Each structure stands twice: as structure tokens, then as C-alpha cells.
Length: 124
Image (cartoon, rainbow, N blue to C red):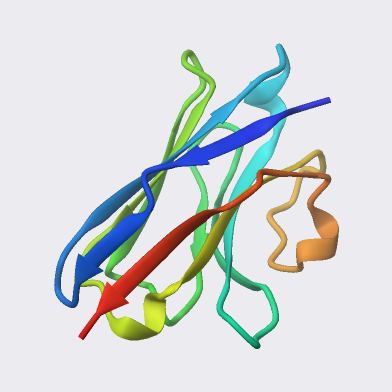
């Protein structure tokens, strides 16, 4: 069992940056694939990025590639999402998620544990 708590959301102007953090409980955190998803009002939850247990493999949605960076610190049970060059279309609730499988997936159904989400609002 893993419990996830996101933080770091807020209001930022277009072109600005934010860093989201996800604190995880559980002694086996290091073994999970970790992902970030987002959901804008009236839209379905969408994949943003994910990272393998070792941090050696990362996947990004095309819409954030080159602007967002995912990282993890297994010693601290933390996952981070550095978001640069933010756009108004990045406005959403951002969720941290953990997947017990061994292959990075982009489908939300693959993820077993979810945080409560943190709001990111980008003004134009």
C-alpha cells in the first residue's frame, strides 16, 4: 500500500515555472513506477509523464515534452515534476500516481494508487 500527497501547486503567469512534489509513504516506494496525470475542467484525466523505479526511463506526453521534467528520490520517497514555460492550457488538477507493474504505462487504469491532486492555474 502506498499513500501519496501532492504539493506545490498554485497560480502562475504564462511562461513561469512551478515544481510539484509528491510525498509517498510505504517501504516499497522504490519499486513503483511513478506518474503524473492532470485533469482540466470538463476534460478526461490525461497522462503527463512517468518515471521508472530506478529513474533511468522517463516518458512524456507530447504536449509537455521539453518543458516538464520528472524526477524521483527513492531515499526520500519523493517524486517531483518541474514545470517550465507554463501555458494557460496546462491549467488542471495534477495527480501523482503509483503503478506496481514493471512497464511504464500511459493509461490511468494501470496505476494502483493516487494522490488527492494539487491545482495548477496558469494565467495568460
